[in-house]
Amino acid sequence: MPKKINIVSGGDSNYFELLKELYLSYKKLNLGNNYVFSILDGGLSDSDKQYFIAEGVKITDPGWPSNTAKLRSRNKNFLKVELAKAHLDSLFPDYDFLVWIDADAWFQNDKALKIMQTIIYKNKLAIFAQASRTNTRDINYKKFFGNLFLIKNILYKHASKGRLDKEIQNSLIARPTLNAGVFALSSGSLHWARLRYWQEKLIRNYRLRIFSITQLALGIIIYHEKLSYEPLPVICNYMGAFRWSNKERVFTHIFAPYEPISIIHMAGQDKMRFDKNDTIQLVNEEDQRINKSLRYNNQ
Image 1 (tube, rainbow, N blue to C red):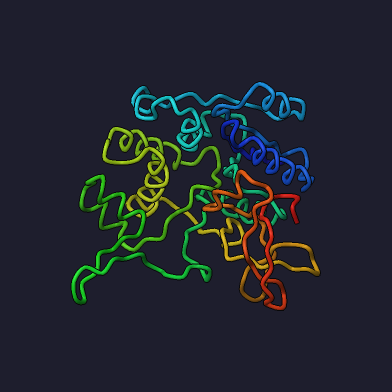
Image 2 (cartoon, rainbow, N blue to C red):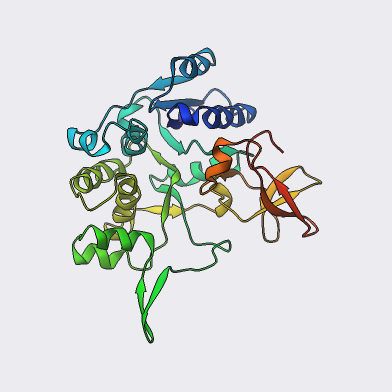
């Protein structure tokens, strides 16, 4: 029997247009009946919800994982969606595989989904570790004195700020960030319970920002507890630098062999996320500089 796969995203009304574009890019893939698309409601308007309901998309209010989470989030409902990433198996118990895609991302092709399935069939976490040819530095650091440097990679920085056990801090030194914007897991994976355990523990740590907690929890269960995972290729969660193929009319990896990107993630493109006409400078096949939007259907 084919496995049932749920692709999940979410956000508030500010992200409606992005969610719509993500959904339309998913719909264009024509993936078949074993795939569904679902949305977590973090403050969508009635008209936003009606659009998706008319498309047959399931909309779920994930609620708050705890009273502490609600209190710390100060009624910012969009944070419900961020925290719900650790609860997808509970929110959608009828699906074999769960794929999370941030609202500011969209599909250019289905290759990422095929790669994810290969990994999650083995009950491993499929996620992009931010260490690839597109990175300008392998490790973030700050010069301290002379030849002494402070390690500043994101996971270690947050663990240190939260004053977590030294053993945990040490396990995160120089580790690449596991980007929580795109990931996949089987519903029966042990990762969910451990992810929730650490999320709940970290939420009670007032030194940590709510938005950093899920990503830190992922780092802990993979690098400290050593739960199984396989890092996704960069084309499965591509955040730049970008190349545009005039011939194929697609965005590609910046470096040879110029593979088409599967999932474009507009992380860091704050203006573009809310302005379809905003553009960035990139290059084409001939290394000529051009300006383009990364938004879906703006190609």
